[in-house]
Image 1 (cartoon, rainbow, N blue to C red):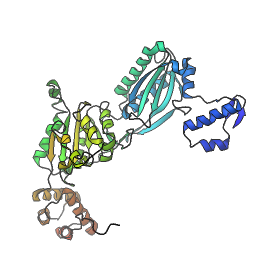
Image 2 (cartoon, rainbow, N blue to C red):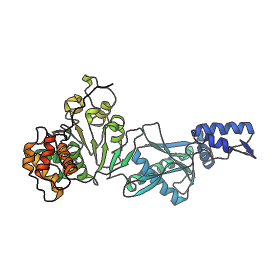
Image 3 (cartoon, rainbow, N blue to C red):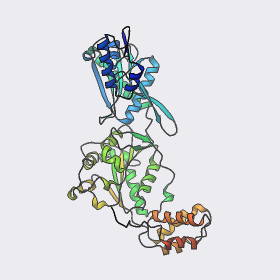
Image 4 (cartoon, rainbow, N blue to C red):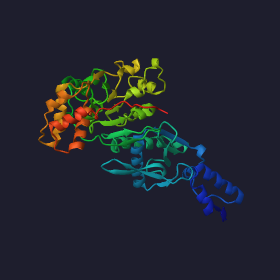
Length: 441
């Protein structure tokens, strides 16, 4: 360390050594240097920034705090950035002497840059009638990803509250970047939602019985054409649909078709088993800011096991809480899928949680023929006799199996497919997943 008048500066060797250490370690070393050298630190700390602008010790101030979900933190950050630009607010740190941080958010079709960790001073007559410091802080180890804090002198608490209310209202009204999009839930706390795409595909790409579509449409109507009536009658608009059936019969594809039809008017949140086992409560809390939502829960049998069979963990409790439990949500269509409904805990499958259980069976010969016709239709005029191929298939074939039959035929014979080529692949049987055999060491 070198003493330069009243400032304490870290030498280049020590600075490099400390660059990878946490902020509190760097702060401790710097304070120790001040004590040993008699100098003072030139960097502005979070508390120093607040005390300089509000003229009181940090402990003498009052703070209006609002915990923020992941999507609300992005929206509030954007609203705060606009307020800073409008009034030319001075910026400072929120954590020790870390600089204000902006994060680039990829929305697939556009990008936005919003503050995620920053403090801003607004003199009286700008954001409100009194001096206030607005802090937007990230929380790495808390369930809530971020918080908004507005600090003021004790007599100005009402002004601080008005700034918080204004930022929240602007964020919800004008900064709903995630609303109406498809989002994927990250499996780690605090929850992060990332925009993603569903890919192409519609009802015309699925071969399902008419009664399946009728049941799906009836449940979707609770949040669309019949939503107003259900609200007026006090019957609620939340719906839960469980898709059950063996792997490969189209559960995930059906979920995505429904999501694709509703996205835009609805926000879609895709939640895989890893995410649902850790952040399910946080996912449903996000729905309050995202408007009507479709929440797709994949492979729920992996985390909603029967307690009588020894299943443990908090995922079941979280699930029961968010679906007709202690936490109430509105306008949410939950579509879950399972390979084995019998493996689920009885509390998870009662009617208050899932209003409909739709069983998807393996396709019969007629359905197999229709699926093959659609798959082979991508080749233009096909010479393949789909009825003959369907008749040659063994029982229990799924739509995923048929796709693999076509894929293997293309790999072996190219695009000029014939009935004989497809039948050869069917008889070969290598398109069927085989159980692993051998010795395990």
